[in-house]
Amino acid sequence: MRVTCPIYEGAQRHPEAEALRFAGQTWTFRALDAEVARWTSALESRGVGQGDRVAVLSTSHPVVTFLFWALGRAGAVFAPLNARLTSAELQPLADAVAPRLTLALESLRDRLPGAEVLESFPANTAPAPALVRTWEEDLPRVILFTSGTTGRPKGAVLTEGAFRASCRASAANLGAHPSPRWLGTLPLFHVGGLAMLTRTAYEGGCLLLHERFDAEAVNRAIDTEGASHASFVATTLERVLDARADRRLPDTFRCALIGGGPVPTALLTRARAAGLKALQTYGLTEACSQVTTERPDEADGRTAGPPLPGLEVRIVGTDGAPLDAGQEGDVEVRGPTRMSGYWNQAEATNDALHDGWLRTRDVGVLDARGRLTLLSRRTDLIVRGGENLYPAEIEAVLANHPAIAESAVVGVPEPHWGEVPVAFVVLRPGHALPDDLDAWCRQSLARFKVPTRFVPIETLPRNAMSKVERPVLRRQAMYQSVY
Ligand code: ATP
Image (cartoon, rainbow, N blue to C red; front, side):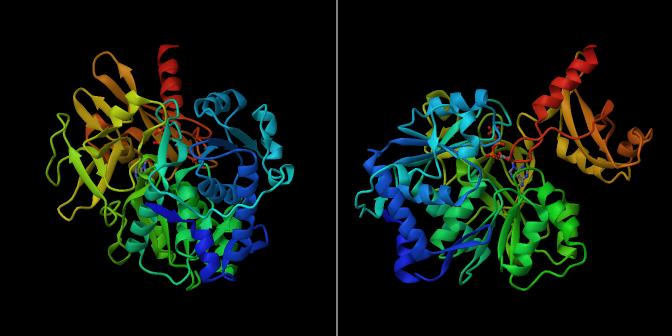
């Protein structure tokens, strides 16, 4: 089926409505449509067409949004690269998509030799009239590299149809809004950022784009720019709440989605006490962002909610057979938001997709009402003498200790038990490593779940999505136990 560019549609229906804001500058749908048309012409005049990949290295910047929609109109594929990676990490990703064109923000160009300057791309070519405003929704539209928490990043291939279905499903869950204004603080090289970009376009709303996360700027956008929706990970939500102190939230702010990694219930309770409606969500790149999200009218922060309308979630055992409510197992997802596969990785694709289902590699449990609780990533799961240990459960207990700011628990090989949990702890300022941590854990956790070691660490290593890099800690713990 062919889909019409939502920016073109917006320019016909509500040309003067705000579509994009960035650093004090505003674009209406009419202005954005004109930019997209100019960028489409530039792509066409450079011979970029159906199925061609364009690799892009950039922080969140308005030109990325112009390029994103222009590539859709040209039938080409957007392949954004993580702007925090080093040159050595970037080159293999760029090479993997065999791009027709590689563009980089001027300030990042030295990390990707041979890239053309993104900001001035349309100025360098002689524009020709570009009238195309529709494209096929089932063809590859985006190759999105996963954040690589579990190893080498894989390029998930997503179609416009998947993004559109995701936007519809999200709106059906969150409820109608005449003109949502999403805070765009997640990077546009991540599915969370692209979900906000596409959602605002399809809903005729405005994207309040921020180049990087800054808690003060987020609060300003909430207080003075009418932000209605936001999406945070746990650490960024915490920073927003810290920076707000007691300031009341304006009525224009509707809700924030919180996910991307374990979300402590206590944090969601704190957000709600401050008047910020925070809904836990579970999503992943391969399913075009949200899979389950709490329903606004029944959110209590205890689960990641039920599947979005039109999506299915099931839990299967190690033999692949579906399990009942209350039984823990592997999470699988089915629905129109699923990726088509991994780019040029047939084996990984076959491992991930079967009979319409996506194997997420997450471990979870559904309750009788179909709400999902995430227990762990399959790779983070610690198996101690045959017992499953979920790092998030131990970290939640440590988080309540007055001396601990945050922690990460990883499994380390051990000859007797197979694996044992080791806790890396970041101490609150002025605190030394407390000697009651073992006893503290034992008050709330079964003995086998109590970490065998508590290792103080200044900060937890995190990737571009603020996710804890557990393999780094695992290596560190193994090294320390040997030497
Ligand atoms: P890679 O797949 O390369 O290892 P990644 O999985 O971090 O990278 P993403 O698609 O960004 O890539 O992240 C999705 C993952 O984030 C999920 O599979 C899940 O493990 C985790 N996650 C998302 N939401 C939640 C949540 N509410 N609770 C716990 N974990 C979550």
